[in-house]
Length: 293
Image 1 (spheres, helix red, strand yellow):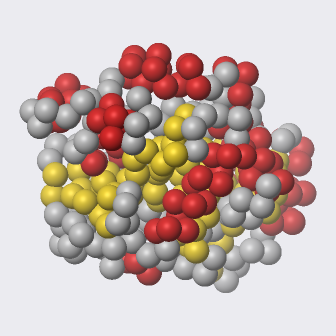
Image 2 (cartoon, rainbow, N blue to C red; image 1 turned 30 degrees about the horizontal axis):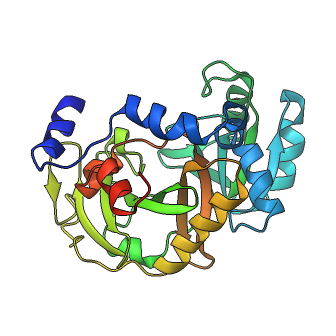
């Protein structure tokens, strides 16, 4: 499928960047390997964001050892909605969204007991979701999506990704859940990649891994041309974030909360190249246009 995806762009004569070119031309020259940890470890990333007043979801608790699970849970379980995630996880693996109804906790697939939650947290610490490395569990504020997203598709938590080079926004996209992705925004799990016109803040066509479309495949809502609220604030927040990290090439993932507006979820030192397909523009072309090549 990947070969087909790249051919789609090549047919339009765009200057597509492959993984090796990205690594050799963007990641390695602009990011010292010793600083990768500030993107790969969400705990370290949150420390930087919180210390520098970068808007991000509040951290309610951190579990580093098995023996701390119950104590931390007692502290965080006062909140009606929680997100539990591994600090070193990738691709959305290990993320659990919890909502309380009365005395019962629920996740997307139905009720879940506290013992099952504790087991999940233990699995995070054992490294089940981080390639076997010891990990820690972050318990964070739940983001209530801005009503803008519900106008397109009402399920899941969509997010934006902005790729920056030396503090300059190069390319952006909206990652939108679908029925096929089971509420997840990740592209490799079936979500949509929707290109963004960086100057106007309007959505382009959506890409589902096979074809481009102007409407959401499940809701039928129009996507192309839809203006993004708070777009200037989203871009400014991505630029602020890039300035606070010792990485000159990175992807900044942002959400837009109904109450708090734009917030940063995490940063990525190896942002995927599917963003080119979502925008129907190659990364090399974008860098050339911005005079960053």
